[in-house]
Amino acid sequence: MSLLHIILPAKMDNLATFIQALSKWLKQHGMAAEKIPRVQLAVEEALVNIIRYGAYEGQAGDVELRGGIADDQRFVIEILDSGIPFDVYTLPKPDIHCSIKDRKVGGLGVFLIQRMVDELLYRREGDKNVLTMFICRNNGRSSGSRQDMHAGA
Amino acid sequence: MEIDVKKEGQAVIIALTGRMDAVSAPQFDKTVDDFIDQGETQILIDFKSLEYISSAGLQSILALAKRLEPINGAVILSDLNGAVKEVFEISGFSSIFPIYDNLDAAKASI
Image (cartoon, rainbow over all chains, first blue to last red; front, side, top):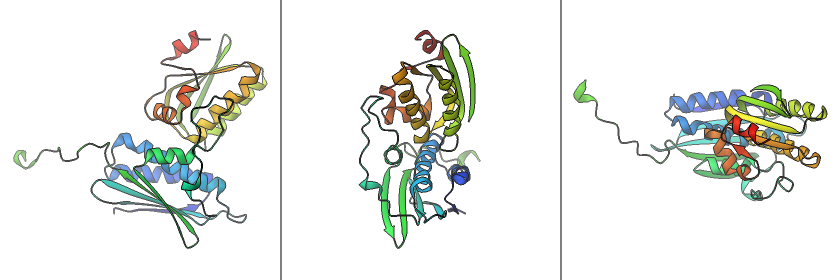
């Protein structure tokens, strides 16, 4: 079983369930331990934006989290929702150099997602927003350093 | 997230443990709002045991600082580690808050 697939209503009460399932799945499939909080952060920010700002005409719609292995180096994670179109690339970049007084509260979520993943794509597919994240398994380290164990078996 | 609070001299010391995310950050807001309502202005936050923070947590810290600024208060942070430290650096929060390596140094700054 290599795929992660969870669909739940877009509610804050479900955030922990998404994050716990994601973390377990990443660990099982060999994501470097120090990278797991980065992926958790990217996914939390995306889910929270959908829960807070995705408009579902008065009722909570569903959010879908999918995970898969893109290739031998990368995981792919997709988050789908049927809220209003939300292209992450249309947002202004936050000013991260201003003082406490001038600093805006908010607007950091997408910025953090972009910094946590190796590639981020957005598309509108039918009535759904699809956010796709590619994340390398390791911190740029070669995974080919394992010794051949047959000799000692 | 666990929130442990103690008063030491002029400062309220808040030690955070676990994860400060969109679900737990409102707990923190409530705690600090109560202290400010009681007249406290010097808030020291000990991050030693905090392992994770998201933008919701950052927003809470910034909102606290914005509330304290007009009343000459201060938010002082100590002992940021790992993923929490990285998020502070990426978001530029490391350069707008006084951050100390450990709690003793943070206390000495007040």
